[in-house]
Length: 219
Image (cartoon, rainbow, N blue to C red):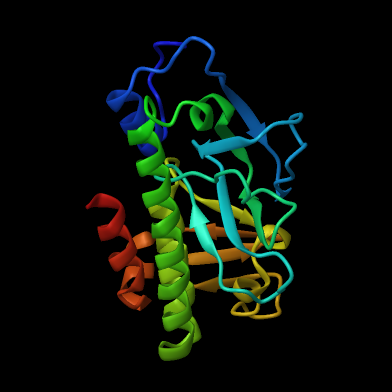
């Protein structure tokens, strides 16, 4: 294992709690936009800890499903990367740490804190989906869009945050005007990309849903 600084908050916490054995494989990989398939980097049950990639997680057979956002504070675990009712998509390409989870699953006593942390992270994603469902039902589209973008900003370590429009979830694209060139409060759409231009202006439009999820990450 390298002594380099770990750029995912959850993984950094896990490595501080339990020193990994030498056979644990942890590598940094580049993730392109699109579905995260279980065999895109070879066979195995992997956990992905995003660095500057952003991913969504949700029902695989529903185009307008409510999706959780996974970034530098979370992970995508085995069973959440294709081949199941839950599917993960990369919406902002970038790097992620990929860990072969087999040695962890084979030694649950040694890695009990890791299993607890990843289970808690999965529960937070379920809570995030529930919060977004509430948001869609009780807040305006503009509030929901601003809150969703702010949550993405909180999960992303770079500035500014840009999305390719075709990589955005359908439920988010539907909140944008049909024109390819537009400026909204805190964001702009130009040449097929959405650019976050001012988190402060987004915060003026947003509901409080993103704050509740950020508080959960920081708890």
